[in-house]
Length: 590
Image (cartoon, rainbow, N blue to C red; front, side):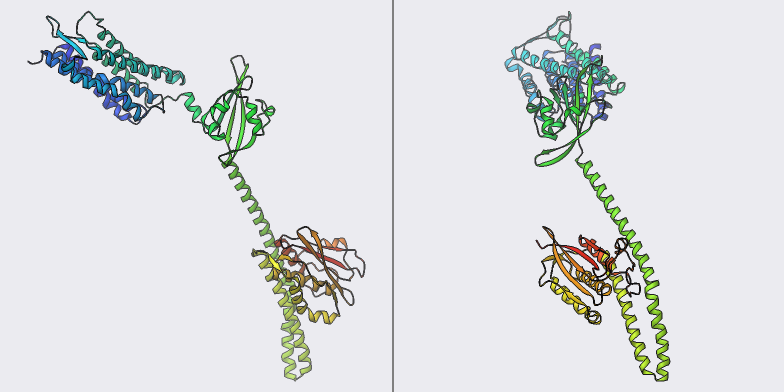
């Protein structure tokens, strides 16, 4: 009723232990593709070998049947685990999932049930007998045995085929890894056939568990010598399909023979719409001239594709395919999505444009600061000096009680103070114009001019100026305070540089379908062409030499026009009495 352990039993146990050691070693590589299933394959082999060892050592038929039933836990599942390993190792993502595993395990689970209940029906083993003079048992198979054997051999062969096909799709250095696994699977497969069909002269001897020693050695060699799971082979198709760039392969007559997944994602097309069609059909829709492509000129084309209402910028390049004799076999078109790249370049261009604008503004600011310094030095120095000197004289005259001269001096101080205020106001206006960003609104030109005439009333009366203007003005857009400054400066200049008396004409005309040009003409001596080019510069005084102007008015008008996106200009015939015409445009109210 006991066990009798022979050398063959210990060899079987050694085979099982070797498989378990390999499982432990593979655990370190468990995150690599397919390793978990290879571990399960080796575990099933260990159960098979250990169970077979105890079955061989058992002395009674019931004991042997018990251990054979135990062995079928490994026998029925080992080929399934090998197939799952092959599927995962070759990255067959469509089938490398739990659903496939559960389907494959249906027959193995049923086989285990049949093995356990065999005494009731004899479907797996119809009969058993001990070989005379030995401890070997011979099993005579029932009908179900051949069903499960066919299933086991089929999926084992399928796994080998998958690995063979996978080896053809990888680069040469990786082929060895595939053939190591294939050889490791072939030895148990052949040993099992020899046993099942009783091709050995020794009755009841099953060499399959012993073959797992050789299998384990081969797999160990692959893992530790060839680094089977440190460097996972990648099929060329996988590499191509995982490219981020789209790819079209054409034959010698420009028919599309292949395209990768990125191309289909990029274009929204499917293989039925692409494969077999002429490539020029696709590129003509994309507005690309194929005649410009050649290997020599490295031509690159850009187009835009709309996929799911999302426009994508695409760059297309061409690469020629030749055979060993440098004969044309076709070509490859690479399509790169450059939408993000163009956005970055556009952003860089916008940034550069802003920086250029900022530099221009800084240059203007430097000029403003320089102008301010000159203004303070030249324009404010004299009136301030006059006010200081007159203040001292006023004190003396008051001490002498000479009120008539004091009154005259106070009037002069008042005039000089007003001049300083105008200079300071002009500088402040320049500063506000540079800094402020305004939203243009409809303005009332009549109201603006009414305010300007009130402010210039003393000048108009003093010089007996005559102002002619239309009864109504068009509706335009602008900024009331700034446009008032424009009219104020242009009218005061017209009064100042006009004839005797000044005759000033105001008017407007349609500049375009969306803007009006306003103009003001005086009857002075006018200006030559060379002076007209300088008139809008800071601190330029042209025309009347003894004018009390301070050179800020027209530059302010120029800056206001620039800020409003309008145009200002000055013209003159340089003939006495015809004066100058200053004009500026404003956008019409929509």
